[in-house]
Image (cartoon, rainbow, N blue to C red; front, side, top):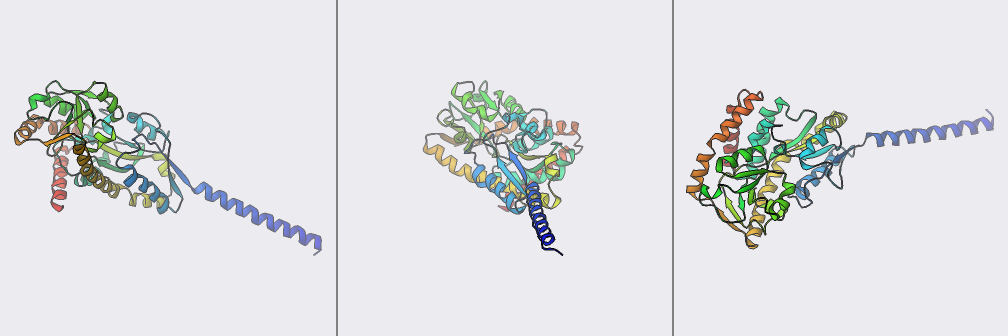
Amino acid sequence: MSVHMKTILKTLGVAALANLSIGLATAGAAAETVLTYSTWLPPGYVLNEPVLKPWSAEVEKVTEGRVRVEWLPKAVGSAAAQFDVVHDGLADVSIILPGYTPGRFPIMEIGELPLLENDPAVLSPSFYRVYDQYLKQLKPFEGTHVLSIWASTPTHIVNDSAIITDVAQLKGMKMRAPSATAVAIMNQLGIVPIQKPVSEMYELASTGVVDGTFFPFNPILDWKVQDIFKYVTVVDGGLGQSVLALLVNERKWNAISEEDRAAIMEISGEKLSLAAGKVYAKGEETSRKALEEGGVTIKDASAELMTQIEKALEPIDQAWIKKAEEEGLANAGEVLKAFRAELDKGAGAN
């Protein structure tokens, strides 16, 4: 073999190795899936730093870099539009509040019912288990995949005028309602509900459009209304709470390998729901203290007021059962009993 031929073969070999290296690098780059996250909740939202950002980092870790969550600098679409944003692939991942689109996710309103549980660390994972066992079969979020779902902190009566000692005080008050369930609850209590997303809370409060709302302690600070709403009447079991779901676009999810999907769900699901509940609980403790130090008056509802509230809200459970059965949940009454049993079991374990 001539020296010239050896040189040609050597050159071809180097070129082949170079092409192979480029091919492997290209394949590696192609294997990385970037999930864009629509960030509509405020930067100081109680779950961002302790739960959601660590979860995002963990996704990359458990998939060995093959899947990465990228937080977008601002929201894609409005708060109420987040399901469609994810469903249509405008962003890959977002948190949605089903209550922002009345009538669209009626079976999920079980998590919004009043007088359920005080401790979100019990409420949130209990709700996830009930969703996983009974509700997901109806595919309420079709076109997306549920990474996790939770119920937030139970709400109380927050207003600008006085601690509530009698339901008669509530008659005619205008309050921002976060969901269709909250609207029904307010109607039962004689309140005038104004259904708007929480992102409009400060404007509604500062302009006097509303006299108050149903809020836990932490969002009073999150949405900077503590200098407007100076009175909080704490309702045992809460006057309802929001349901939140962390969703990913179904097509994008299905394009991820089965192994990586399993790894992501290992750190999501009930585990993420419990983490959210624990952070909500801790946030309520620190937020209550901050509010009281800032001059907000906080009082527990009296036994007399609780009796009035319980009587007024008796129709709410039955209304959900009827609505859920119309949606195809044949044993809705039994599901609600199972939910309450989960809550009792969880509370007893603490």
